[in-house]
Image (tube, rainbow, N blue to C red; front, side, top):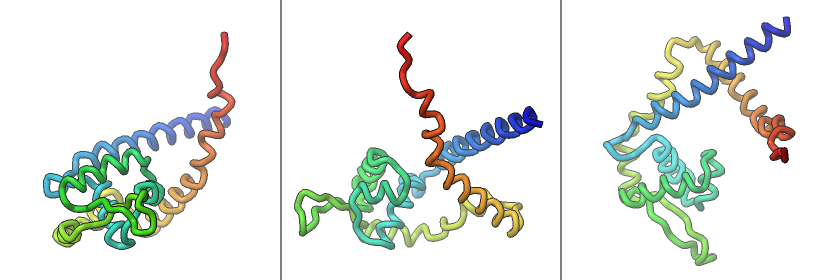
Length: 159
């Protein structure tokens, strides 16, 4: 029985990782108006809905590294869709905020909302979507323990 269980776990692990990688590859093929990636749209939407943010706050909210956020924001600044500014309270703190051009971009491309999940979950029943959501939430809850589980194996060996 244990052998079958191991095989099932291996298969789940393999397809989960394959799914994550393939999602990223497909996502990265997309450039809205030949310019803006889906992660950049997430940044624009967040700034539009919740106002100016520091790079670190964007990273926390969107689950990106600060480095990744900086690179994504650099391109958005260059495109004129967001701007960097210093806060009045503390001149050292840099925030990013959406520009009028950024708001216009979101408006022009409103139709993109729901397109990706619509494709990803095509053919799933409402019940299957609910079950899938439950699985996703449980995997997310387990994720922080992942690095902990392999900790004993991560210390360098002196041989």
